[in-house]
Length: 377
Ligand SMILES: NC(=O)c1ccc[n+]([C@@H]2O[C@H](COP(=O)([O-])OP(=O)(O)OC[C@H]3O[C@@H](n4cnc5c(N)ncnc54)[C@H](O)[C@@H]3O)[C@@H](O)[C@H]2O)c1
Ligand SMILES: [Zn+2]
Image (cartoon, rainbow, N blue to C red):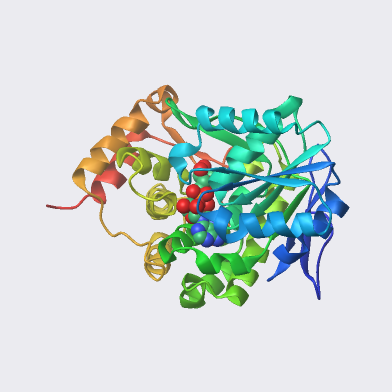
C-alpha cells in the first residue's frame, strides 16, 4: 500500500502517500549527521527554524543547528520547556511570536527535533505560521519514531482534553536516527515500545514475536534492535496512513488499546504514561473481544505476558481507577446510547473488520471486563 520502500547502505527509505504530496521517512543509525544535505534536497528553504525542548536542545538541537550553519544554511534554534504540560496554546503562541520576531518568512521551514510533544507542537506552529510553512520531523524518542512523526497529525492539549486543537500538516521529510534513543530514560523507551507492540498486534504477528524476543536489547536502547523495530513500525504505520490519511476508516485500527487506555489515563489524571495505559488497554480490549466472541481465546493472556517482558504488564487495576474509567466512558453520550465502539482483534496480528473496523460493545460488558480486572482488595 505504501509507495516505494527500500533499504540501502544509507538506510531505509519509506514513502508515505499524502494529499499534500508523498514524503520520505528515512531511517538509519547516524542519519542525523546528514540533516543539512537532506534538508537541502527534500525541504529547500531560505531559513530553518529548528524547534527543540529543553532536554533535547543540548543533546541534539544545538548539534543540528551547528551542522546546518557549518554547511551554509541559515538556521536558528527555538527552545521551549520540556514536557506534555507545555503542549499548549501558550507555548504555540510564544513560539510563533519568536519566529515572527526573528523574521522567518514564507520561505522558512520548521524542523522539529525532539519527542512527540515537540513534533506535535512544532508541527502545529508550522501548520499555522503565515498560514502554513513546511515542517520536517526529526523524532528523537521511541514514541515519536514509531508513531507521532508519521501521518501528519499535529496539535495541542487544551483544558477540555488532549490533542483537541490541531491540524493535519504532513511533513516534507521524516529523518530518524535510532542512535538518539540511547539518551532516553529506559521507561520512556518502554512507553514507546508499547505502540510498536500495538503495530504487531494489529497487523503482524511475526513482528510482535520478534519484539518480544528482543525486549532486553530494545529496552536498553540498542541502536540495531531499535533500527529494525522502527523500520517495521514505520512501514506498518505508512501503509495504514497512506490508505486513509484522514482517519475515515482503516486508520482507526491504530486506536487498538486506546479507547480503554485513554479512559485509564484520564482516570489516573495522566500520572501514568501513555504507553502504560495503552498496554493495559490492549489487554482489556482483547479480553472484551474474547468475551463477545470476536477475539480468539488466549489472545489477552498472550499480549499480557509479552507486555510484562517490557515492564508494561499490569494484572490488576485499582478499584478507584475502574470506577473513574467507567464514569469517563459513560459520560460519553454515544456510549450511553448504544455501547462504545472498539477496535477488536480477530487474533494476534489481525484486526476484526467489524463495521468500519470497529465493534459496538454494550457498556454493561465493558463494565464487567473492567470490574473483573479490579484489584480484589
Ligand atoms: N501526532 C501523532 O500522530 C502522535 C502519535 C502519538 C503520540 N503523539 C504525541 O506525542 C507525545 C508523546 O511523545 P513523547 O513520549 O516522545 O513525549 P516527549 O516529547 O515529551 O518526550 C518524552 C521525554 O523524553 C525527552 N526526550 C525526547 N527525546 C530524547 C532523547 N533522545 N534523549 C533524551 N531525552 C529525550 C523529552 O524531553 C521528554 O522529557 C504526546 O503529546 C502525544 O499526544 C502524537
Ligand atoms: Zn498511542
